[in-house]
Image (tube, rainbow, N blue to C red; front, side, top):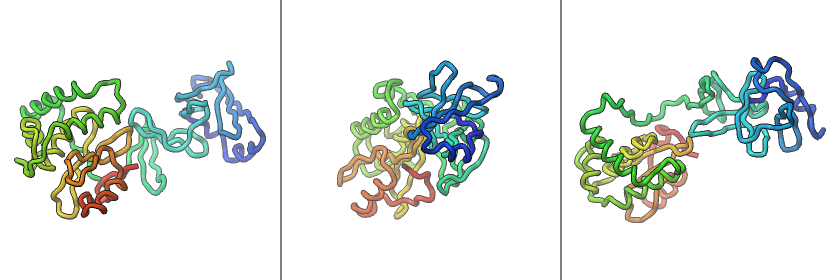
Length: 285
């Protein structure tokens, strides 16, 4: 739901400390969306339908714009994520940004007609998976191997974090570090890794990438910048990027869905093992 731009800064300023303020919108419902009245109190704005019911935990189209209302019925503002998609709700008026480009907190964002936000950057892109009818026999074989594994560890009732954690710990529990890999082609290495259940950091990265992408999670290859000799993944959880490194380390630790700051803190304490060029990758929370 979005709050009408008719709520100008003048109106917003005028209602301070007045308790509850009512604003009515005219016009056919087919043109403006929901009919009703806006109210505001010390906690924020809410919208009331003619039958005295108000929207909560839902989107609503009002006066030509979309708004989102939280659990208590108050209009949301700022960033909002739903089903892995990020939206931006004007910090004053609450209406969702659409069909525009905006600089928010120093970063440039593009918003399509649905309101979905994408960063305008030159970051490394997630690996591109070819359409099913264009996949090689090896790619199809890797898909089948991944499907067999995923069928036993994730299901539709899980959250994204639960699915990703199960993938992470399945790899950790079924692979051993051998110090070498057969190739630097990730599909071939994923196949070898899934057959042999051992390999080096590139094997762990490749198997992770195969399982992540087959489960519907994007994967970006991250390479250590000091010697270009360690690989891991960036993947998305609930619309945010996180580090995902399944390779075991002699110092111990779990690296499932870690932020940039968490990875770099560990790196500083352990000889720079996770140093990477942050300008090449989308930022984490």
